[in-house]
Amino acid sequence: MTVDPIPHFRGDAYLRINARRLEHLATLGLPIAGRSVLELGAGIGDLTSYFLDRGCRVTAVDGRAENVEVMRRRFEGEDVEVVEADLNDPPTLSASYDVVFAYGVLYHLADPAAALAWMTKLAGEMLVLSTCVTPNSSDGVNATTEDPIWASQALDGRACRPDRRWVFERLGSLMPHAYTTLTQPAHEEFPLDWSAPIHSATGLSRAVFIGSRVSLDDRPLLTTELPLRHADRA
Image (tube, rainbow, N blue to C red):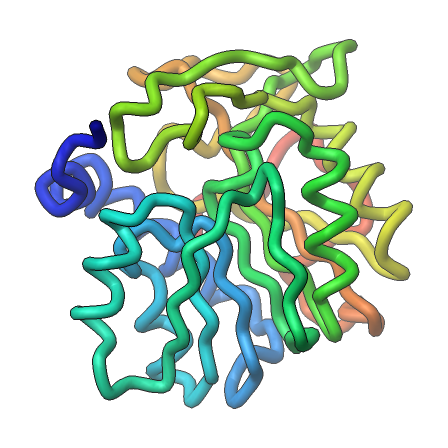
């Protein structure tokens, strides 16, 4: 049985990190307005309105029936299709999407390599990804477990904390252009210095990655290198 998702996602910690992530995303200058968006691991849809406000058509996917029910009520009458699907056994979707948005889902999956391959196949223009990572690890995937009773955690308990370089290089092998960001969201789970990351209260470290079919080299806050230190908070 899953704990009621609404109070879980309405806690101060979730509201704060979501605000910081969207603030940062808005600074990157990504070509998102008017696109079709596949949002993976959408939870109860707290990030979905970012795309609706920019005229996007959204397909929001989550693996938990309780989360899906909340989203269907929340976005009734909006340009949002809500799909229930286990991303450890991803569905065959009938369309590709301009943008695949995967903020906070990769590390809740058992096989991140297979997940990235599936995501990039569906990304007609971009994959916009944020995930928890293990800093300075020699083990690419770093398998772990989570308590599936919580509405935001791994559906079957199998999870991972992939190495940051592993994610970046894997994305670069799957998309013509791979980027990370020169800045980080203004939140302690997003380290500024990867040579000596300060442990957050949760013990989690997060990073942002962009895979693109076309060059985004003109976006000043994106970089094709994996920075050891980020410029500042966004």
